[in-house]
Length: 187
Image (tube, rainbow, N blue to C red; front, top):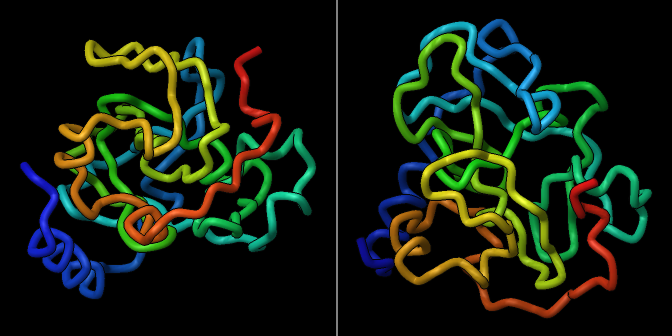
């Protein structure tokens, strides 16, 4: 699939019809092996359902302690949502073969049917706009890229597959807001 104005427009129109996010009765936090904690479906989640909506305090990255950066959700070039500590948003993991995508600024939407017990994931690269971001990947997918970087570094093929299902701000002209340390390096 090639990213076109038509695909972006269709995706944007679909965003206005999205239902409210699933409640925590559909999700649980649990052991995700080498990734630490993760989020798992407790009930079947269908294609297109909103799985999570990042809510929380919106801050500048410079106002967020570095130890919390890895839990934040970038919603604009200069704004981040800090999810409530211990919430589903705190523990959603990355996958290079995700079962969810981003719609709009903060919604995580099922890319396909997610079965009970399956980990809920999205591709962090579809949410990061600053070039200094680099994180060792532990997703274990056959298509694993080994290193997760910002959206800019995704292949054109992968950008085309995601289409407009990435954070809104990434589809606007970028500003270089590189930081000297990401706070997301694997330990």
